[in-house]
Length: 151
Image 1: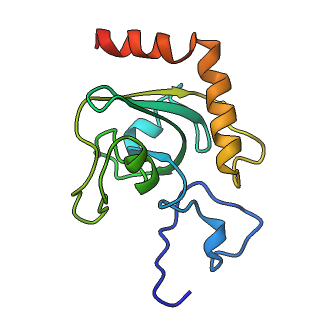
Image 2: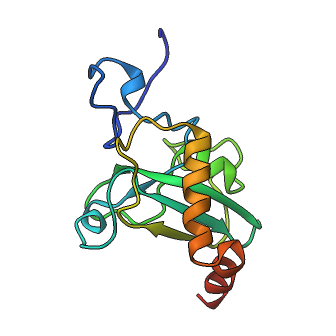
């Protein structure tokens, strides 16, 4: 893995060694959202591994995700993986500088306490299937767009 840097995530495969890059969620491959530190402690916001959907109203892009990390205490909601940034209309997002991130109004719906057991690892298909199934319970993409337009 020479030259490959993996960022440790709060969501991890507990069966793997801390030195195994497959233990952590790969930002370049998996669409995920980061909970700000204080936000993650608020009752009802959910847990690592919960599913959600994001919609970029300006770019007309929608994407499923999982919650995979906790950020600094005073961070704003909106930090995301490279994969989620790309899915929402970003162009070559750079996590160090913030360049290339999706522009526009982004709305998130998180389904608290929806995570699988175990919460990680999951395939892209499992994330898509679980998030889509949960979205359908609230009326699907149409209802999400209606709610988002009100904001």
